[in-house]
Length: 166
Image (cartoon, rainbow, N blue to C red; front, side, top):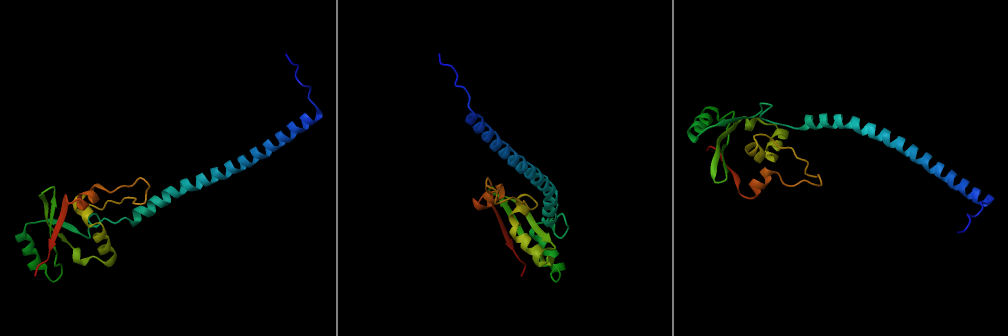
């Protein structure tokens, strides 16, 4: 058995230096943690702001009563168009899903949409039939995949046929 080596002044200098370095490292880390805590607090405040902003930008033309879906056969549509052809010459839609007709009718108010709402309606057109409203989805999320609607229309399981009067 060997006896432990007697500590020298240099050993103490080395330990002091090592301890001082560790104190500096810890003080830096604590400063960094305080900055992270502040940043976390700011990010948590931003969650509510962003959610409110997103909800303000999300449009649902049916909920906002800018459009109204009228379930109708061709005769009902023809009667509506004949009465309203000047102010609302609506298109007739047939929504098919999985080989059968799911909906037939028209969107009252479609031709009265402004440019922004018209663009929105075209962008979320399939969603209005598949879900009954727009399906806002984070397409840039790393785990995002196609929505059920996207897959149904893309795979041919769902389709909408439209035509106009005259």
